[in-house]
Image (cartoon, rainbow, N blue to C red; front, side):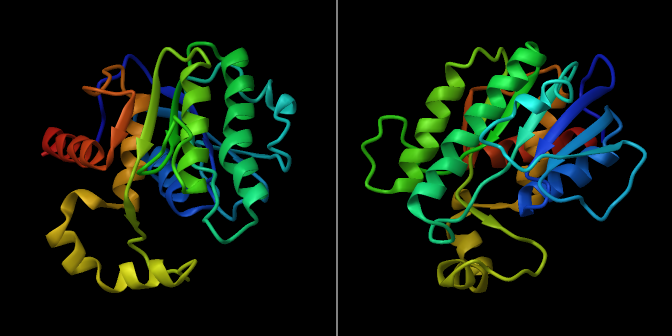
Length: 235
C-alpha cells in the first residue's frame, strides 16, 4: 500500500470526527509511510493506535495554541466543514472560510515545508460571483490558501460524496442521492466519489514525494483518476 516516499511522514488531520476525515485518519494510521497521525479534534475520539496523537482544540477561529503541535509536521489533511442548511449562513462562512485560513496560517508558520490537502467542493468559485453561498465560501477559502505560501497545496473539489457506510443523512437531497446512487454512479460516474476513496487520495498526496499531475485544483474526475492510478500501482 505504500507510495513513493523518502521516509515516514508526520501528518495532521483536522475533521476526523466527520465522514471523510474519519476515513482519512483510519487510512493514515494503517499507511506504512506514515510515522504519526495527529488528529486535532473538538472532542476526543474513542479510538487508540500506536501512531495516533489526539489534540483537543475547540476554537478554530484562533489556532495559535496549536503552534507547537503543528511544528515539524510533513503534511496536513483538512476536512473540517459543515453542510449547507445545518448551520446559519454566518456560521457556514466562519467554518468554511475562517477556520481553514487560520489553521493554514499557523501550520505554515510552524512547518513551512508541510504539504496541505484541503477538502473544498465542486463548483467552488474564487471569483465570488456564484449565487450559492457554499460555492462562494469554498472559493474564498481556496483563494486565500493559494496565497498562503505552501509549496505543495492540493485543493480537492469532489461532487457527490458517497458515504459508503450507513449514516443519518443531513437532509432530503442526500437521502435521495444515496437511494439512487447505483444508477447515478452508472449514468454520471464523474459526479460521484466514494468517501473512503476521496480520503485516501487526500492522504496520499501529502505523504507522497511525487506530486500528481495537474493541480493544485483537483475536480471530481481528477480525484477518480488519482484513486484509479493508486489501485493500479498496488496490483
